Amino acid sequence: MAPIKGFLFDLDGVIVDTAKFHFKAWQRLAAELGIHFDEADNEKLKGVSRKESLEKILEWGNTSLDPERFEAMMAKKNDWYLEFVKEMSSDEALPGAKDFLAASLALKLRVGLGSASKNAELILNLLQIHDSFECIIDGTKITRSKPDPQVFSMGAEFLGIEPQSIVVFEDSQAGIEAARAGGFRSVGIGDPKILADAEIVISGLHQFSPSEIINKLNF
Ligand code: B16
Ligand code: MG
Image (cartoon, rainbow, N blue to C red; front, side, top):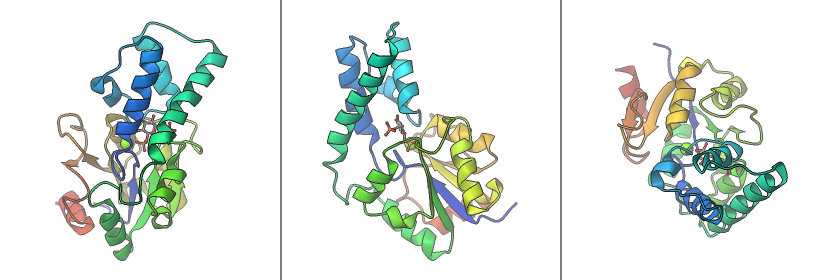
């Protein structure tokens, strides 16, 4: 097995729980459009870009919007989302996330971010962990969404490491699919039933140290 040299982290659901803010903002927008939207629907939007998320919600509501209104609705959702995000303090990283990043860097592992979010840099700055990432591949840099592996492949290219030597940490089905499609090692964060395709599933970054994760993957 190829030695593990780097980690690529998804943001929302792995480093920080911004999924709850996406949920509240999408639910408010869906209500305004007269479309039902619940937690199960939100699960399907994890790791999915803003544009594709709105397309899916409209599809579920059997409706459509002209391009101008579509743009306005995306902007509205993002404004609501950012209102929640800006209330966050630097302590709001998910349990263990900051220690895990520090321990990864102490082991001289190469560390990057692979997120669909266009707000990733803002969030990393709010959490004061921007400098932990050698590369930040986010929604402003990619042209194809997860489950396409582009976001992680760009990260691997930047780090100059083969995908089989990089572990992707993901909380979404689409993200695990992307990791596998790109030939990466994969660690799911969350429900093992939802993330059944990941090589291993853990409840959060607090559960194991980076060395323990590497040992598990090498086993
Ligand atoms: P934004 P991740 C994803 O982040 C979220 O999981 C997804 O729900 C969201 O729609 C997407 O970012 C786009 O976010 O509206 O901030 O550009 O999990 O890939 O870090
Ligand atoms: Mg995520």
